[in-house]
Image (cartoon, rainbow, N blue to C red; front, top):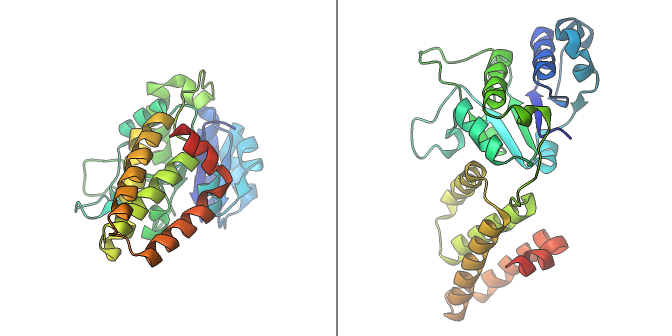
Length: 269
């Protein structure tokens, strides 16, 4: 699989779909995913030009399926966060995204383009690991999705030409998707043990997810953090600050979520 793929949310206009496929061909990308498509495929192929093979092999999926398939889902939006509390729309620029992808060489990224008319909603952005916004320096920030993709792919290619062509070279020992899920699980458990405000937990998880995606941690970094959180939880439990019912519930949830590979993670600790 190429390290970067592209997905379109409910595409309606064949011109945009064709131009996206053509752009992907320009930058050496092959895999296009379509979420709830509703466009004329024959007309789109006309605009795809030499990228018609990209469109021909495109796959229809759901956003949840993409989240399971890729290490990092990159949402896109023209509406930037105006408050520090709006974690969902806390975004990075195209240049910053290129730097993150270069650092995370070997990870599987998927750029998700929103609807032509309304973009991506908050629920969809919450499912993403990162959000990218292109600052046009004007009041009118909404760009055509194909134009926005062109800017992002150009920045990635300019910073690291090998990235878009799939020549990843030696892969660093980066934290796996499972490692990151385990880290998020321990943070959630610590929040429970510390009586963290329940209404803030979704924001906490979203903030952690974006922070981890931006930093591209190694497996060692992640396991050191998990080890610290685990020891902190054990200390709290020894002091009797976690009710036994909550402790049992937390343990059962973690067992169900991480049973297939807990031995490997504990060995890394």
